[in-house]
Length: 361
Length: 169
Ligand SMILES: [Zn+2]
Ligand SMILES: [Zn+2]
Ligand SMILES: [Zn+2]
Image (cartoon, rainbow over all chains, first blue to last red; front, top):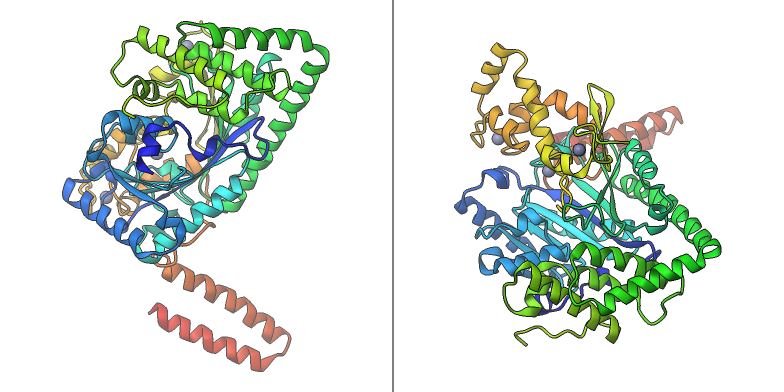
């Protein structure tokens, strides 16, 4: 299973789920810390390993499938490439991926839907990541894992402040819920800034997910809660769901309008995107994402029929540097990365699934 | 709308922060936002801590003498001084919340308002809190029972409250 996670692109959230023509995935993350231990930022190796042992014991002592299905990955045992691959799949944070410390690690289940980052910013970061709009399901599963671990671990908690976290922005529930959205119609019709402004005023945060420092991000966004204290977990979840449903509705109306009144223009745009993606000899990540965004819209509007949304989800990860490097089997300069990216896209789009074999298989 | 920082590129990042109980908005282009460390695209976590670091910094500096005093204060559990926390935007351990309660108070209020935790309580770490919450609930039931002249039930509830209070010590 470990091998699959590193050699294949596919993980569970790439499947289709509720509203998955617009909502790619949902995620809930709970931050937890052990009592009487310095937070990870101030850890030395000895205490860090002690924490790992406590967590491992709590994990192994339980016989529920949820935890049994998980594997332990110590970061000193993983190459930087492997850690980056986990990051590109959204299973660990970029910061955590950079660490090769012996007391950093990850517990992760077979399809990546449940993962626990150990000694990242907090001792435990329990994450549940599911396809489509499934925020409450994510919360429920993350909570189950949390319950099991809390049976055997003493968690730092304060009556007034709630769960104590390394960063005061997470204190309280320690909960961050987010959805990954694809909003091409809102973007095409120039309503993005207005929407983002609106969302911020309601205490939520929007940000791009595949920016790489440029403007063209393929209209992919992440929406999450900002406030972690003074609200029930369930309410944080339902607020996010309510906001997401509004955005989905808006995006849907605009897509319908585009489809009705500008069908030819959209067909042209989608066709060109398909043309570039299947014929380019080299392509940058930003250009690829821009065209993948159009292609995704084309699939939803029935302009493209033989490509599934989950293949497109997979492609978004397959074209990132570490995944490309895994397939190529060697370090690459920017040019050969662009060449390889074009090759991977072409192969996946033409076969309808990710059949690209890794170099070491 | 153009970026407030460089006034050249369009503002694509809009931050809303609680500032002394008031909402403050910042509109930045991605470039300037990244430079400010306010929010780095392509990272998986909010970079609010960086921003927070600078917030916390404001706390110490304006009143010079007081700042020096608090800087000497060290968390006995993890050895952090407040300057460490200011620098990283992160606390050293759970006890830092108590050690630096005064220094952190304005920041916590800015981020979360005057809120108290009403969410989940851990089964172990929150043992006493759980019991206290149960006692509160029982006391309400006791009132109701007395009000409804159900004295037998009231006596039962009173006993359970006593037992629980014993548990609390
Ligand atoms: Zn943080
Ligand atoms: Zn700017
Ligand atoms: Zn401390």
